[in-house]
Length: 239
Image 1 (cartoon, rainbow, N blue to C red):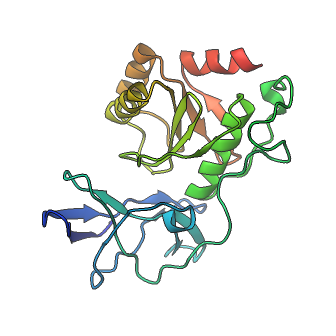
Image 2: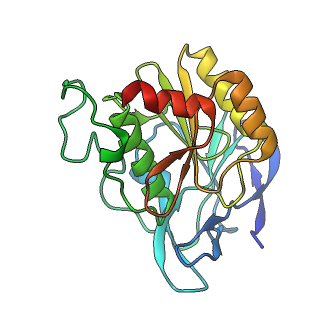
Image 3: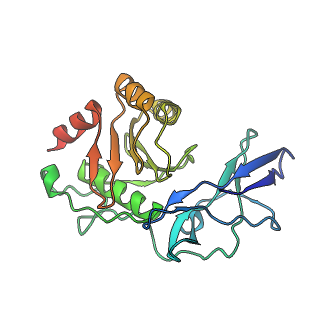
Protein backbone atom coordinates (compact mmCIF):
# COMPACT_ATOMS: atom_id res chain seq x y z
CA UNK A 1 0.00 0.00 0.00
CA UNK A 2 1.45 3.45 -0.93
CA UNK A 3 2.71 5.34 2.10
CA UNK A 4 1.52 8.77 3.20
CA UNK A 5 3.54 11.54 4.83
CA UNK A 6 2.66 15.00 6.17
CA UNK A 7 4.05 17.77 3.97
CA UNK A 8 4.08 21.37 5.23
CA UNK A 9 4.26 24.24 2.75
CA UNK A 10 7.07 26.62 3.83
CA UNK A 11 5.28 29.56 2.19
CA UNK A 12 1.78 29.44 3.70
CA UNK A 13 2.49 26.87 6.47
CA UNK A 14 -0.43 24.72 5.34
CA UNK A 15 0.02 21.00 5.99
CA UNK A 16 -0.93 18.33 3.45
CA UNK A 17 -1.15 14.56 3.80
CA UNK A 18 0.62 13.30 0.70
CA UNK A 19 0.22 9.73 -0.59
CA UNK A 20 2.89 8.47 -2.94
CA UNK A 21 1.44 7.45 -6.32
CA UNK A 22 2.03 3.88 -7.50
CA UNK A 23 3.08 2.87 -11.01
CA UNK A 24 3.09 -0.56 -12.70
CA UNK A 25 6.51 -2.19 -12.96
CA UNK A 26 7.38 -4.23 -16.06
CA UNK A 27 6.77 -7.33 -13.90
CA UNK A 28 3.23 -6.12 -13.15
CA UNK A 29 3.77 -5.24 -9.48
CA UNK A 30 2.82 -1.74 -8.27
CA UNK A 31 5.81 0.47 -7.44
CA UNK A 32 5.67 3.59 -5.26
CA UNK A 33 8.65 5.85 -4.45
CA UNK A 34 9.81 5.49 -0.82
CA UNK A 35 9.22 8.89 0.77
CA UNK A 36 11.84 10.41 3.05
CA UNK A 37 10.06 11.45 6.25
CA UNK A 38 13.16 13.06 7.75
CA UNK A 39 13.83 15.57 4.97
CA UNK A 40 11.82 18.71 4.29
CA UNK A 41 10.17 19.26 0.90
CA UNK A 42 11.74 21.75 -1.48
CA UNK A 43 9.97 24.51 -3.40
CA UNK A 44 10.03 24.05 -7.18
CA UNK A 45 11.15 27.33 -8.75
CA UNK A 46 12.79 26.00 -11.89
CA UNK A 47 12.24 22.75 -13.78
CA UNK A 48 14.74 20.45 -15.45
CA UNK A 49 14.11 16.99 -16.82
CA UNK A 50 16.64 15.43 -14.44
CA UNK A 51 14.95 16.93 -11.38
CA UNK A 52 11.54 15.64 -12.48
CA UNK A 53 12.58 11.96 -12.29
CA UNK A 54 13.85 9.62 -9.60
CA UNK A 55 15.08 6.02 -9.63
CA UNK A 56 12.90 3.54 -7.70
CA UNK A 57 13.52 -0.18 -7.18
CA UNK A 58 10.66 -2.67 -7.45
CA UNK A 59 10.34 -4.70 -4.26
CA UNK A 60 8.90 -7.67 -6.17
CA UNK A 61 11.50 -8.22 -8.90
CA UNK A 62 14.37 -5.87 -7.92
CA UNK A 63 14.21 -3.92 -11.18
CA UNK A 64 15.25 -0.25 -10.88
CA UNK A 65 13.53 2.22 -13.19
CA UNK A 66 12.82 5.95 -13.43
CA UNK A 67 9.51 7.35 -12.18
CA UNK A 68 8.13 10.89 -11.74
CA UNK A 69 9.48 12.76 -8.74
CA UNK A 70 6.63 13.12 -6.19
CA UNK A 71 5.24 16.65 -5.94
CA UNK A 72 2.43 18.46 -4.12
CA UNK A 73 0.58 21.48 -5.50
CA UNK A 74 -0.40 23.72 -2.57
CA UNK A 75 -3.54 25.89 -2.93
CA UNK A 76 -1.34 28.94 -2.31
CA UNK A 77 0.31 28.27 -5.67
CA UNK A 78 3.53 26.75 -4.37
CA UNK A 79 4.73 23.46 -5.86
CA UNK A 80 6.58 21.23 -3.38
CA UNK A 81 8.95 18.44 -4.36
CA UNK A 82 8.67 15.60 -1.84
CA UNK A 83 12.05 13.98 -1.05
CA UNK A 84 12.55 10.30 -1.87
CA UNK A 85 14.74 7.96 0.19
CA UNK A 86 17.90 6.94 -1.66
CA UNK A 87 16.98 8.97 -4.75
CA UNK A 88 19.34 8.61 -7.72
CA UNK A 89 19.77 11.39 -10.26
CA UNK A 90 18.69 10.08 -13.71
CA UNK A 91 21.02 10.39 -16.69
CA UNK A 92 20.21 12.03 -19.98
CA UNK A 93 17.21 13.82 -21.49
CA UNK A 94 13.75 12.25 -21.66
CA UNK A 95 11.96 13.61 -24.69
CA UNK A 96 13.71 13.38 -28.06
CA UNK A 97 12.78 15.69 -30.90
CA UNK A 98 12.21 12.58 -32.99
CA UNK A 99 13.64 9.12 -33.48
CA UNK A 100 16.32 9.80 -36.02
CA UNK A 101 14.22 12.62 -37.53
CA UNK A 102 14.98 16.29 -38.07
CA UNK A 103 15.29 18.74 -35.19
CA UNK A 104 12.22 20.69 -34.03
CA UNK A 105 11.05 23.33 -36.45
CA UNK A 106 12.27 21.60 -39.63
CA UNK A 107 9.75 20.15 -42.05
CA UNK A 108 10.36 16.52 -42.91
CA UNK A 109 7.57 16.40 -45.48
CA UNK A 110 4.31 14.44 -45.33
CA UNK A 111 3.81 12.30 -42.25
CA UNK A 112 3.99 8.56 -43.11
CA UNK A 113 0.97 6.31 -42.44
CA UNK A 114 0.29 5.44 -38.80
CA UNK A 115 1.44 1.87 -39.44
CA UNK A 116 4.94 3.26 -40.07
CA UNK A 117 5.16 4.58 -36.51
CA UNK A 118 8.28 3.25 -34.75
CA UNK A 119 7.44 2.90 -31.06
CA UNK A 120 9.65 2.67 -28.00
CA UNK A 121 8.92 -0.13 -25.52
CA UNK A 122 7.17 1.17 -22.40
CA UNK A 123 8.50 -0.19 -19.12
CA UNK A 124 8.57 2.97 -17.03
CA UNK A 125 6.83 6.32 -16.77
CA UNK A 126 9.76 7.91 -18.56
CA UNK A 127 9.34 5.45 -21.45
CA UNK A 128 5.67 6.44 -21.63
CA UNK A 129 6.61 10.13 -21.92
CA UNK A 130 9.08 9.31 -24.69
CA UNK A 131 6.49 7.20 -26.56
CA UNK A 132 3.90 9.98 -26.28
CA UNK A 133 6.40 12.58 -27.49
CA UNK A 134 7.27 10.42 -30.51
CA UNK A 135 3.56 10.01 -31.23
CA UNK A 136 2.98 13.76 -31.13
CA UNK A 137 6.00 14.26 -33.36
CA UNK A 138 4.53 11.76 -35.82
CA UNK A 139 1.26 13.71 -35.72
CA UNK A 140 3.09 16.83 -36.91
CA UNK A 141 4.16 18.56 -33.68
CA UNK A 142 7.91 19.17 -33.93
CA UNK A 143 8.39 21.40 -30.87
CA UNK A 144 7.33 19.07 -28.04
CA UNK A 145 8.70 19.99 -24.62
CA UNK A 146 7.89 19.52 -20.95
CA UNK A 147 4.76 21.54 -20.12
CA UNK A 148 5.42 24.60 -17.96
CA UNK A 149 2.41 23.89 -15.76
CA UNK A 150 2.46 20.61 -13.85
CA UNK A 151 -0.57 18.41 -14.49
CA UNK A 152 -2.73 17.26 -11.55
CA UNK A 153 -1.97 13.69 -12.60
CA UNK A 154 0.88 12.37 -14.71
CA UNK A 155 3.29 14.36 -16.87
CA UNK A 156 2.44 17.22 -19.21
CA UNK A 157 3.87 17.73 -22.70
CA UNK A 158 3.32 20.87 -24.74
CA UNK A 159 3.92 22.14 -28.22
CA UNK A 160 2.57 24.85 -30.51
CA UNK A 161 -1.21 24.55 -30.20
CA UNK A 162 -1.12 21.24 -28.30
CA UNK A 163 -1.18 20.17 -24.65
CA UNK A 164 -0.87 16.47 -23.82
CA UNK A 165 -1.09 14.55 -20.57
CA UNK A 166 0.80 11.29 -20.10
CA UNK A 167 -0.73 9.22 -17.32
CA UNK A 168 1.55 6.32 -16.27
CA UNK A 169 -0.36 5.41 -13.11
CA UNK A 170 -1.92 1.99 -12.48
CA UNK A 171 -5.51 3.35 -12.31
CA UNK A 172 -7.68 4.16 -15.35
CA UNK A 173 -8.02 7.85 -16.10
CA UNK A 174 -11.23 9.41 -14.76
CA UNK A 175 -13.64 11.95 -16.20
CA UNK A 176 -12.13 14.57 -13.88
CA UNK A 177 -8.63 13.84 -15.26
CA UNK A 178 -9.82 14.39 -18.83
CA UNK A 179 -11.85 17.47 -17.96
CA UNK A 180 -8.95 19.10 -16.07
CA UNK A 181 -6.68 18.62 -19.08
CA UNK A 182 -9.32 20.04 -21.42
CA UNK A 183 -9.84 23.12 -19.22
CA UNK A 184 -6.10 23.77 -18.96
CA UNK A 185 -5.67 23.44 -22.73
CA UNK A 186 -8.69 25.68 -23.30
CA UNK A 187 -7.12 28.42 -21.17
CA UNK A 188 -4.00 28.22 -23.35
CA UNK A 189 -5.94 28.09 -26.64
CA UNK A 190 -4.48 24.64 -27.31
CA UNK A 191 -5.84 21.24 -28.28
CA UNK A 192 -5.69 18.54 -25.63
CA UNK A 193 -4.59 14.90 -26.05
CA UNK A 194 -4.52 12.25 -23.33
CA UNK A 195 -2.19 9.21 -23.17
CA UNK A 196 -2.81 6.53 -20.54
CA UNK A 197 -1.09 3.26 -19.67
CA UNK A 198 -4.11 1.85 -17.84
CA UNK A 199 -7.01 2.91 -20.04
CA UNK A 200 -10.04 5.02 -19.16
CA UNK A 201 -13.11 4.78 -16.98
CA UNK A 202 -16.46 4.75 -18.81
CA UNK A 203 -17.27 8.30 -17.69
CA UNK A 204 -13.88 9.47 -19.00
CA UNK A 205 -14.69 8.04 -22.43
CA UNK A 206 -18.07 9.77 -22.46
CA UNK A 207 -16.80 13.20 -21.47
CA UNK A 208 -13.84 12.96 -23.85
CA UNK A 209 -16.23 12.32 -26.75
CA UNK A 210 -18.37 15.27 -25.66
CA UNK A 211 -15.38 17.63 -25.31
CA UNK A 212 -13.55 16.33 -28.38
CA UNK A 213 -10.46 15.14 -26.47
CA UNK A 214 -8.47 12.42 -28.29
CA UNK A 215 -7.67 9.46 -25.99
CA UNK A 216 -4.81 7.02 -26.58
CA UNK A 217 -3.69 3.94 -24.67
CA UNK A 218 0.03 3.12 -24.55
CA UNK A 219 0.64 -0.62 -24.35
CA UNK A 220 3.94 -2.35 -23.47
CA UNK A 221 5.13 -2.03 -27.08
CA UNK A 222 4.70 1.75 -26.94
CA UNK A 223 2.39 1.88 -29.93
CA UNK A 224 -0.36 4.45 -29.21
CA UNK A 225 -3.85 2.97 -29.71
CA UNK A 226 -6.73 5.42 -30.30
CA UNK A 227 -9.74 4.51 -28.16
CA UNK A 228 -12.33 7.15 -29.08
CA UNK A 229 -13.68 9.02 -32.09
CA UNK A 230 -11.60 12.21 -31.69
CA UNK A 231 -8.41 10.10 -31.52
CA UNK A 232 -9.40 8.19 -34.69
CA UNK A 233 -10.02 11.50 -36.45
CA UNK A 234 -6.67 12.90 -35.28
CA UNK A 235 -4.83 9.86 -36.67
CA UNK A 236 -6.82 9.92 -39.91
CA UNK A 237 -5.96 13.58 -40.46
CA UNK A 238 -2.24 12.74 -40.39
CA UNK A 239 -2.33 9.36 -42.19
